[in-house]
Length: 339
Image 1 (cartoon, rainbow, N blue to C red):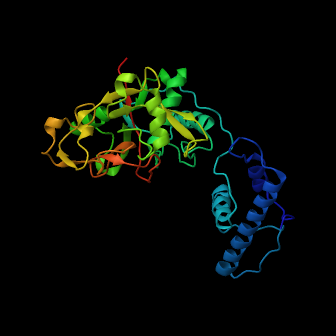
Image 2 (image 1 turned 90 degrees about the horizontal axis):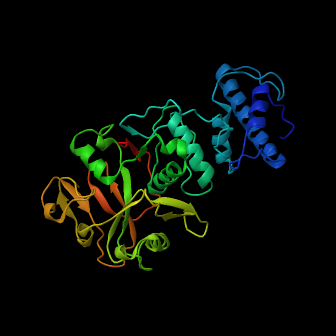
């Protein structure tokens, strides 16, 4: 099929296509992509024949124009059906100018100028790890499928980049999230999305959940923290292919907050509460009454590293085992910090 004659648009798309590492397609990749385009053309002409009842034109001749699905979208779809790994990265684009960007006080992370700039830097740093963020998004679309590792990647890049750091916006802390929920000031109805808010380091037992990541955070902590159960906010990431997700969490001095929390010792059963106003978790004194549930690990030891998540049902989940648990409704809320 590789002798298929490309149209001008198809040739331009193929020449501009880039792999994840920014390199152009190899000759073998070009041949495979041309084969996909050939199949697309045949399917298009068959649909045209079935709908219009006209004579089928020969390959390489002028083609009918019954549909106008973007070449990239159709090629990716058909390529995946054939088992061909098609990179969803778009060609390299100009970086947004954030010099006049004025963020809202509270906003959902979306694919605006700030989002494009931040995601580009995240993907440059964390390419081929579970922290990489897809870029097949529409302008100003909310970034879906977010989870704690992607969130930590955002924090890492912001903390290390002066231009982004000067905007003074960070993912919302658990306490800020609870205060916004209490004051009905979240940027969209809380039941419309869920959000990972921080790490919960119960212990670093080899028998616990996420033992390698738990040990990585444990080694970053001071001696006074090591025997406590901890809520860890705005942890960063470091690329390490020896870890299951290609990254390991770490403490960023001056950015990451670590809080010992007595409520985390109340494992073994769940608790009713209203709001988590003690660093984002309910105080021990407030447990037992309220309209919300704090879901806790069923174990009392060998618990490991978990994720604190606010669910779409507005409950707090302190037992979540997945560092890359994701769905369409996963979001990140950003808050503009006071100077």
